[in-house]
Length: 111
Image (cartoon, rainbow, N blue to C red):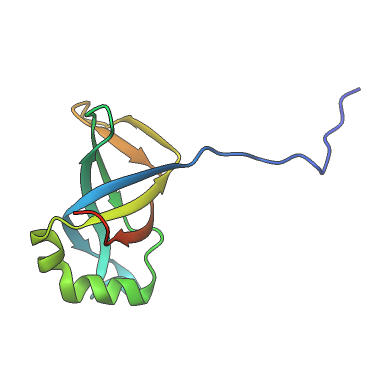
C-alpha cells in the first residue's frame, strides 16, 4: 500500500528574467498612493518578447523609491530582475508572459 511521507519536498521551477520598466500603476487599498505594479517588457535569449505586471516582492521602501524616481527609471530604460515559475503565451496570444512574477531587484549593472 502506498503511504505519503512527511519527507517529500514540493519543487517548483524558478526562472530569472531581466526586463525593462515600461510603465506602472498605482496600488489599491493600503497601496493606493504608491506603486502597485510595474509593467515590464523584454526579450529572452531567443528573441521571444516577454511582458509582465509585477507587484509581488515590492516592499514599502522600494515602492516609495520607485514612486519618487519612476519617470527617470523609465527614461533610463531601467532593468529589473524578477523570478517567475514559467513563461507562457499571454491571453491575447501576441506575446509571452511571466507567470507568477516576483520582483527581486533593480539591476544597476544593466541598462
